[in-house]
Amino acid sequence: MGVNAKIEFPVIEFRPSDLKRGTDGWHRLCKRVREACETFGCFEVVYEKISAKVREETFELMKELIAVPVERKQKNISPLPYHGWVGPCNQVSLLYEGFGLEDASNYDSVKSFTQLMWPDGHPRFCNTLHTMTTQIEELNKLIWLMIIDSYGLGEKWESVMINYKSLVRFMKYMAPPPGEYEKGLFAHTDKPVSTIICDDQVSGLEIDVNGQWIKLSLSPSSFCFVVGDPLKAWSNGRLKAVNHRVIMSGEKDRFSIATFAIPVEAKHIDSGEQLQAFASLSPPISD
Image (tube, rainbow, N blue to C red; front, top):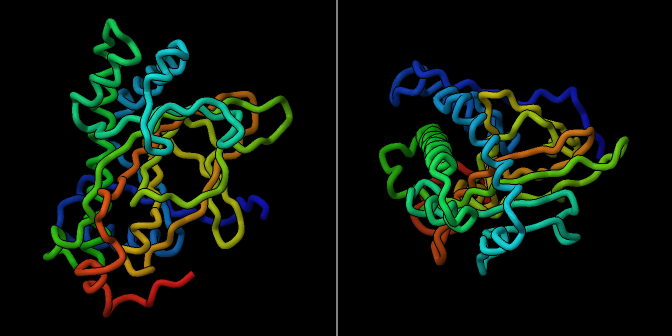
């Protein structure tokens, strides 16, 4: 499958005037979001509520995080896959390094992570990261609400909303040898409910659209919302769980932040009231 730059990937601007629930602008926005998630399984969202300053500071601080000694990085551990630190390895990629932070909108969680990496403390890292991750989680909830409203389920949104916890991964993809293209992350669909990705404007993220890979180049005020397998199941197959990967080229390292909505353990997403609400709207789940 080659990379096809001719496919028009959906870019949706979240203007403040359209974010008031119940307005005509809101309903138009909801429809565009739903259609993008049904057709592509993802879309680029232009969302300026998260300031360029906070975003720039976050990526600046990520470089400080990458520079901490390995013995501190190894303290970022978890029994769950990809919830802790992963260094360059054959199982993922020799170009990849990533950290995991659970419940990142909780200040105490961010503070505990910060103290692991910097025993003497790093208030700027802690405060900036908490601000960034909290605002990204708000964006995720906003998009979920748009999808729910677009399906006409707004009145029962509390009962159909998937119960989840957040996981943030801070990732670095090293530049490959000169003139080469290498996988920074293998092709996959996401196991979390949904993912919001932002990067430092070094491209590498690619989306599979009908067998063609398209490379995304996010703007400084853009994020990529990605539908995961559980959200596809929740919608009874209407939403698409998109295959995506990272391919590195050029001379620059790539830094990105992915905020995952992890379904709470033992929560059934493929049955019950959530799917009953979609029964009259949706085709059966099929692959």
